[in-house]
Image (tube, rainbow, N blue to C red; front, side):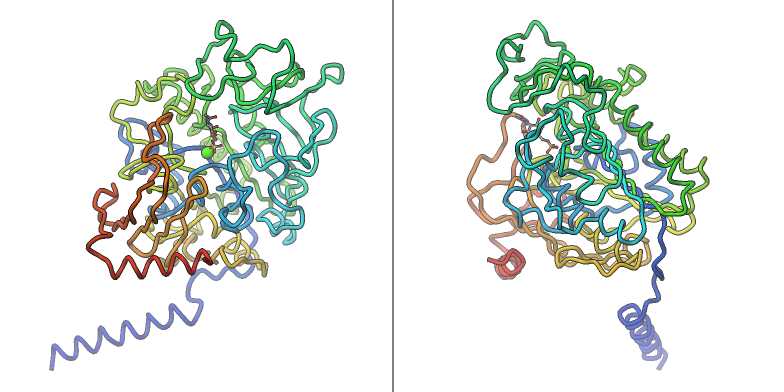
Length: 508
Ligand code: NG6
Ligand code: CA
């Protein structure tokens, strides 16, 4: 009767559309389309740091625009809770825990990516792209014995970037110089640079011994060489004329990124730009234009600065007439931290701001805020505005971009989720391995399973819960975002299933 008929209709509807989704490509027909691609990547920006993601104490209108006019992802992950492993996986499509060397690197570390390894820029280059990185590298340079006064190689140019304008590691690590295609910018041959991560150079002041020279005080670590009154990690000597000015770094990277876009937008080739910004990583050094603007101290100020930079970059795309021909991805390399080694008021002036959003933990943590980050895709005219809760990882960028541009490249770890990125499908991953300082956990469906780990519950220096526990932890992350309710004792069957899956995925 009527009721049966209705059921029949619903049933046929499910059959028709359910099957279609699986078998045929009703979704975004990529057709090897080759738009320009820009990845805007922030450093330590938390899920809760943007007004689009619910922040009420800070306004980020430019980045919000990407979220509101593009697809905003609420279940997207960085591949690790720290920078080097996260960036390694972003560029290679390989889980960072497969590589024992993918840990936070000193500024003197050798190149982490093999020169014969596939990378996002290499894949795109093979498909006719011009490729560039502007900003933070932190994936090692050279062979472990770099002479900073000669051509520094191998580096980004050898793993797929046609153009590279980078800082070697982090803003708090030496050498504090820009490197353009392997050459230290502005270096005076008569004042060579030396870098050492073990011992100081004779007669050089340090943050530890010369506090009178500091304009930013160190809290933990960060007490080696002093550059611009800021104590750093590692020792450095010479290279005076090449040293960057911290307050100008945002402008410097922005200018290089804009210049690259302006030149390449006139080319027949498409381009790929990896714009790896330094904010809000320490030391937080806003340009005076942004100083005091957030009322939250330097951490808030540099987020406002980054927001402005993103607006300028987008304006450049518009002025060059390539907004409708450019796919922009915005994200962050890991979760947020307040005090990451300097006294800079990040804790004191936080007020009601919650950089970690509704989640537990932060940078370094296996809890959710370590790797759950803001992530959005924007492509004017091609991506319809929307919010997606599909499970997706930055790991998936390699295979997804490859499929978009008609390349065969993929890895086992990196899934082709181009339809999800384009907002045409909500079928994300079923599961994902999360990583934080070489420990791993499993996200599967609505659940997160964290196996037992030794080690402190809290990393005291930064005041962040690491996720370590002597017991298994199991959370329904959809309902229990703050990971307050450990279900491991009651959901024993589910736990066993997830442990098994975790072990299969990890291969042990
Ligand atoms: C840590 C630093 C921290 C930051 C981090 C790297 C100390 C005590 N702490 O070792 O300040 O530089 O490394 O951050 O030195 S990341 O975002 O590049 O992973
Ligand atoms: Ca980082």
